Image 1 (tube, rainbow, N blue to C red):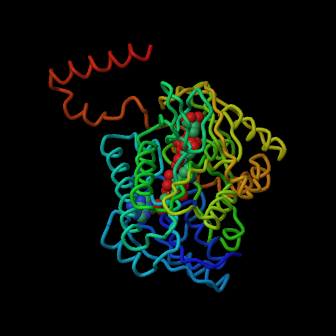
Image 2: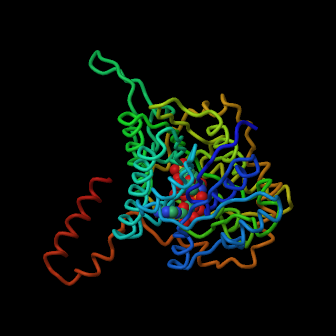
Length: 419
Ligand code: NAD
Ligand code: USQ
């Protein structure tokens, strides 16, 4: 291990944040775990829940101490509360902060105007507060921020790691890579990236923006120590990723719901590789004023390929699977070029796990053990449609003639533009 650092993990009650806090604690870092438990509230609000039981943060840190003798300090704090954040930074004077604390569901951000606003305010304000606190209190601190591969969208050119050198009208410059994101959630990440880049330029902040692909798996060395250390596993149509949903759908005998043609291609990585990538990033900080961008994923699959990987992993275990293509509730390219670079973390020493192995050795077994608590309604129906966001406004004004006229005209314009 390299030197022991003071590290704050923001979003430490979440799917990735909790295993990360334990992993860094095991490596000997002094870890403070911070979360405002917003995500547990959003679950209550929408009637969703984790397939694996989740202990409270108090129980988790107590169990961690019992199993390992190591301490993780737990704080309930909202990143949007600037005063509380400053006090926390003064108390712990972190060498590095790892920022997972955002609303991370694309469908959630597309439910309504209120959800889009809530997502962007929570994410953009929280991140901006953090930039100010680092600048004022711990200017040497390394910000490790979780962004998303979906910030780039699916352009018809190779995707570079954050920056692209462009020659235009005889002049050349290296600029942030152009971004055409998939949702209002992904757009919040683009805004974060711009704010981080700006803060590095003007204040000399040291930052790594990790454009992460879809993370899968629930078992790390640390979560496996005790059931109370387990992390969450989402499967509903708001929070569950396609891969998680495919694993649960097949376990309960439902077909895998591929939205549209299934050519949508994304980057994927095992949760153990997320731990490794972030640890490598922490051990190799950027220079003062440097805003590094790494594309953090290990394999890429189209949805059709993903479904085939799940199907053949289940076949190896003697289990059957069916697939169905349903109308796509999202607006996205269903057949597209996709070639993002992802060599920076490999160059730092990442040794990837592979999806086909992890499904057989862990995910499918764990899902089979817990499938009894699955509510089939949460599994099947994509309850959010990208095109109808704003329906609540329609409902409010539906009886006013002028509104009806404008809304119908707008809908027709959009429809003809799409054709
Ligand atoms: P998660 O929803 O499980 O965890 C996020 C945590 O942040 C939650 O516990 C939530 O309560 C907390 N949080 C949200 N807003 C907060 C605030 N204002 N103050 C304090 N805490 C707050 O999400 P996750 O899957 O663990 O993702 C972590 C990060 O990684 C997110 O930023 C997400 O966008 C990014 N990411 C995730 C994936 C993935 O596949 N899970 C892929 C790419 C990027
Ligand atoms: N999809 C299906 N069937 C389903 C669910 C989704 O076909 O039952 C499709 C979607 O239409 C989309 C693709 O699967 O084309 C990926 O969707 P997803 O829900 O698996 O993942 P996404 O919405 O992209 O979001 C997840 C995380 C998010 C993270 C992102 C990384 O929830 O936090 O930022 O993955 S990335 O995809 O690289 O942007």
